[in-house]
Amino acid sequence: MRKPGFVLGFVLLLSVAGFAQTPNIPIPSVNVNITEAKTPRQVALSLQVLFLITIISLAPTLLITLTSYIRMYIVLSFVGRGLSQQGLPPNQIIVSLALFMSLFVMYPIFQKSYQEGIGPYLDGKLSLAEGYTKAMKPIRDFMFKQTSERYIYRFVKMSKTERPRTRDDVPDFVLIPAFILNELTISFYMGMLILIPFTIIDIVVASVLMSMGMMMLPPTMVAFPLKLVLFLAVDGWDLLIEKLVLSFR
Image (cartoon, rainbow, N blue to C red; front, side, top):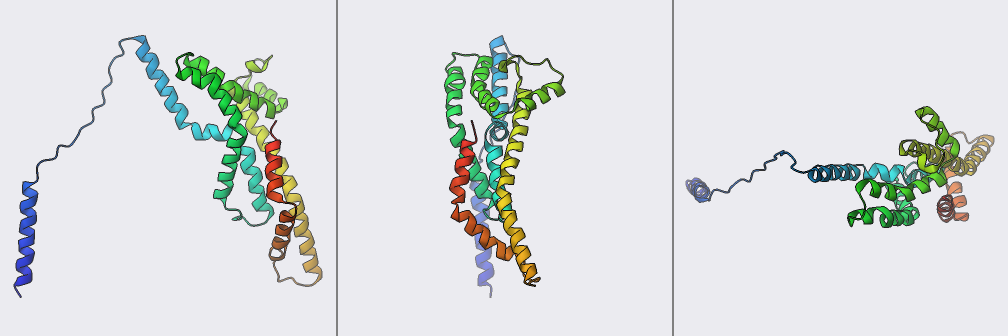
């Protein structure tokens, strides 16, 4: 009966002895010091690094608001609502499809932005301000092509700034919200066109079931297969993707 206790005590003794013989492992320390800049170039470099970090942190927001993502995501979301199935297709699939379709549409614009602004800035040929202006120009041109002038003038009026004479005079804080509002309007118009045939099927199915006295049968149970057949018959995904891509000027 004493053997298990003896073995346990012997193991504990070996563990304590081994721990006592373990060499001390140094713990690293991190020191953060704020020193005075000796030259104006150091100040400018610090500000540039801070600006780049800010841009990187805002990258997801910029990707959503300055590209075709808004229209892509909202229109694709209307498909699930039209089918009366909120989980079909799954939201992760809609987000991924909208993201890659946006990259497909925006790739030539991003490429031009890199060639004219970002690339020369990284090579030291342009200053930060010049690089930002040239990099934003292709993106601004894209937003101008999509945005109605009435939205731009509305935000100019609300901002109480001088009426711009050219596109270059329109500030970014006016153009970006005008572009977002325009995208929301267009995407809801396209979503309405998607919902119309599905709504007609819902009305017809509900009327037929009511006339047959089948009050206990949910209309969505009958309407969903009919909607799916209609959507597949017209090759809905191919038609929808094509119209979405071609809707951008």
